[in-house]
Image (cartoon, rainbow, N blue to C red; front, side, top):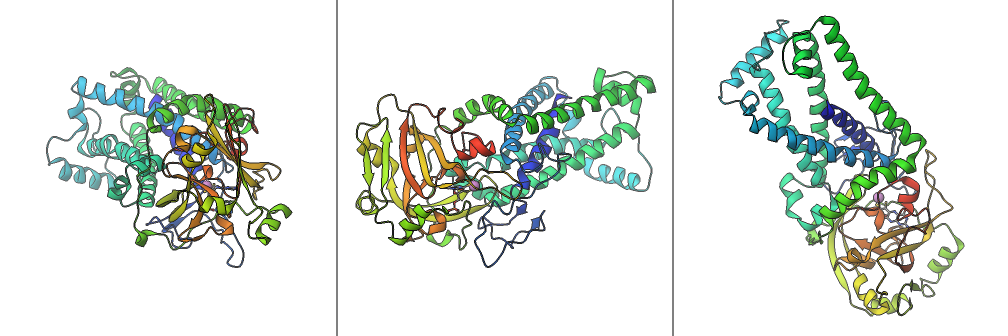
Amino acid sequence: MINVIFIILLIRSGIEILSAHPKLYTNDNAVDGKEWLKFTKKKMPEDKLWTSTDEETRFSSWVALPGGSNLGLGRHWHFFSIVFWVGNGMAYYLLLFATGLWDTLIPTSWSVFPQALNTMLSMATGHLPPLGNPFDPAQQLAYAGVVFVLGPLLLLTGAAMSPSVDARFPWYPRILGGRQIARSIHFLCLIGVILFIILHLTLVVVDGFTFNMANIIFGGGDVSLAVATGLFLLYFAVVISTNVWATEQSLSRPRQIQVGLGKVIEPIRHALFRRAISRQDFKESEISPYFRVNGRPPDTDEYRELVKDSFSSWRLRAYGAVERELALSLDDLHAMKKETQITEHSCIQGWTAIGKWAGVPVSFLLGLCRPAANARYAVFHSLSYGERDEYGHGDPTREYYEVIDLELARHHQTILAYEMNGKPLPIEHGAPLRLRVETQLGYKMVKWLRSIEIVEDYRKIGEGQGGYREDVQYYGIGASI
Ligand SMILES: Nc1nc2c(c(=O)[nH]1)N[C@H]1C(S)=C(S)[C@@H](COP(=O)(O)O)O[C@H]1N2
Ligand SMILES: [Mo]
């Protein structure tokens, strides 16, 4: 019962996440037009700059949670539900083995396969075989498949989509065929789960309904048709009202839902991924021929002036809780310690690309400005502003900024890049300088940098959620998964 509630929340929020990048690929270059499956009719223009925000679609709240293109809250529901679904699943495994009931699920002889085939053939011809207790071979295979194959596979492919997991263990997504293959498998498992639910419900109703309902709720016996129907409807009512409530709350009080679910998710995310340090070192030959853009270059006179004088008057400021303020030109940065890395970029929406970045480690700059003892976060301010998308989301009046904690800022692959793929950083990718934090999702990596502010607390900045996308799009402060 509890399991069903979380599975439905997981399915619906998963569909929401898919809507942010409704394309599935067979390799990590994720080239537009080369997807093997897509759920959008939009075509990207060939003659002008488009961004991955333009590729988003939206699904109705009837199928997606919360629906209407809200990736931030979709993810919050997904991760919140996973915590409970995994907890529930572990309790189930424990019970299954502790009570010795596992052999009702796990086939103990190869003969289940021909037997299952027999059952399916007779079902296909309209004859319902006697199902029930103990499980029929076909049923046994279906349940064992879900419990021991589909469930674990969903978790394994889900983990392979975490930029922190992939950065720390670059071999892991490779054994699955890469992050985009993992994403595709994750999607196929979703289809499997939906099919299983339909099959399961059909069998419960069609085959020995009164007996099944008694069995599911009371663990045995039999009940009258009226009681069985009542229980069945009650079951549905609980699942549906939970979903209606979650959807309605997300649409009417998005900030509260973001903050509320975040209280469960963030401590777990932090504990799991805090120690993940990027060990990525892709080969030159793996660099993607094509690297998407997200976020448009600043549409301001200030930026146009900077471009005109080739950024010679641009300075990177470092200020706040520091012993020494900095104002560095591009030449100053070029003269400092240089770090080069070939890494995979994972955008929260779902696309990936491999690129080579070079620039100054943030830790080196922190060494120069020396944060005060109470300082905990680095705020990266941009020369750019947010943008409003076609669904009305986004805020062009707000500065783009993002917060990371100083621990993350000191990782050796956290750099301020002035070079991409061996050339000066292109304008659309963040010239003159952008942040790279290789264990995090793309939205943390502020482009067109203006300054770095060292703070003790970020809650007084913007809406206090830890970044432009957190403030405006309800993304999480943590970007490790
Ligand atoms: N200033 C600014 N920086 C930004 C963004 C933005 O909109 N504005 N988008 C972020 C997101 S969501 C991603 S995925 C990456 C994309 O980097 P790219 O355009 O170089 O691929 O930039 C990040 N940095
Ligand atoms: Mo992104």
